[in-house]
Image (cartoon, rainbow, N blue to C red):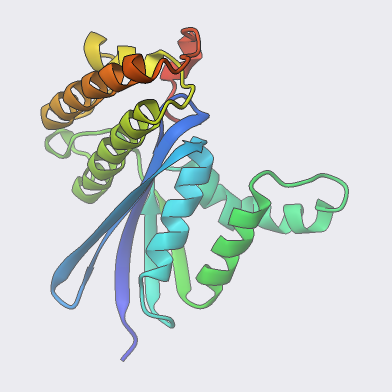
Length: 210
């Protein structure tokens, strides 16, 4: 019997480029499957693509999958832009080509429908609850990646620390705000101890979505 799965994916990046993360959620065999991961240096688009790749790869080959994402980059890339990219790839290099090739391959082993949903809308405000859950997972993991990067002396924008103390964390839930404050404050001490350099503030470092 062909399995039908609704897969939610999301990516996040602090700084863009900067520390980032991916996450996916889907239901399978009466259980909810969740996974996430972080990267010390990446971009938001790379994390959106990675989330879709890893999410699809976690579903059985041959499945019928509806992939739901708030990334127009992913949806339009797979439904509108891909053919043009393939035609013009020799003339115009495609950004994130290796990731697109992985996504095409993993999607080709399944029957995938691509659906865009408006992101960053709380479930109680009419947003999609599973997209919101995916955003929670990705956002929390992005903070973990930022904290780890700072603790290991990576040069990052000061916004990675400042955002945790000035409340400019978009619409993250209170639990994630607390997690961010705690994690990044600890990382700040680690940074001071190692004497690692921190890049000067940059306003566009607050842009999470690329």
